[in-house]
Length: 240
Image (tube, rainbow, N blue to C red; front, side, top):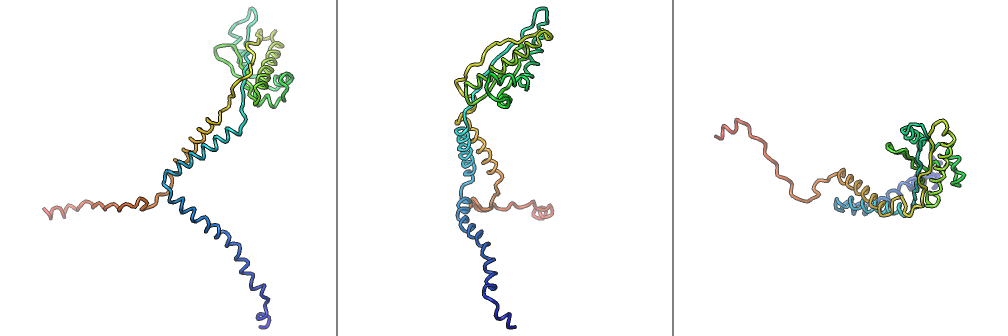
């Protein structure tokens, strides 16, 4: 009995200390509650406007912060040798277009491009035409000069590999047009990215507007009058 009466005050204050931390979320909710009430009083179309503005700002910021990219293209053409089928040049052009981005070709191209093989593999793309025996080699870089150098380097390495097997294939590759330094970036400008972001934000805002919960009595109009149901046939006969 004496021990329970002489308990230290620190032990009795422990429950108050434990109840202290849960009061912080309550304070945060009390501060945010007026802001939430103001948001609820906004008109429904405000979500659409907010989405358009936020998407436009994010898209324009992405376009401004992302460095411009330039693309240069070099062309090589497959030429059949004497006494060979001209149609075979088209087939070999398709084949050389596929092997242009392989490691064997890119390893030789890095000597003239002065960039690592990984950079060439990420930046160089090739394309062929189904009607003409031509291969286009395109390179993309943040520097116009570097883009042109990479495209010409890969095209040069590809012609050297084709020349090494020309006796067997009876087809050789020749430089058709060298790559020129681009004067305009191939990447989207800040205005374009801003429009794309605004469109995406407007779409999300419209979806949020469609799926929002509808609250009863929001318009403040009088409730609709109930429509009476059809009277039974017996009551109608009695009235007649």
